[in-house]
Image (cartoon, rainbow, N blue to C red):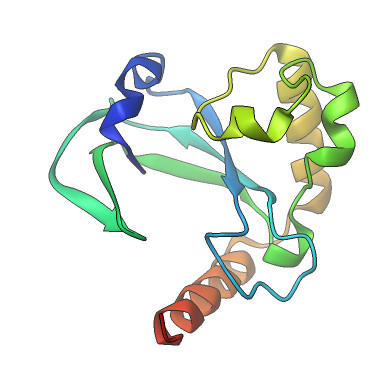
Length: 147
């Protein structure tokens, strides 16, 4: 998993065993045919220390120069993503303009929030192969679209 070097301070809190939720925005997969286009799509566990990458990953005009290995625990099909908006009143980490907090890249969660979001992901979870196939198809579709 790759990260922007500007997130270095937050990355210091990541270590092998740290859980992370994957949040996808509408800009990641434009043309997503599933209505709401932003939400949680999975949960991973960090399996290596975060280090500077020899070759930064470039995507969408952005460079990601830090990275670590991860293990995917749960991945949802794009049509099953968990929308955060309806859950905000139940979550401790988000107040006011909650969507702006997500732009920081990392939002620390307490046990309550982690449990609630993890439970929602488990409820919608599908086979890893099926979900990966759907995301790969979307990525290929995006590559083929004119800019």
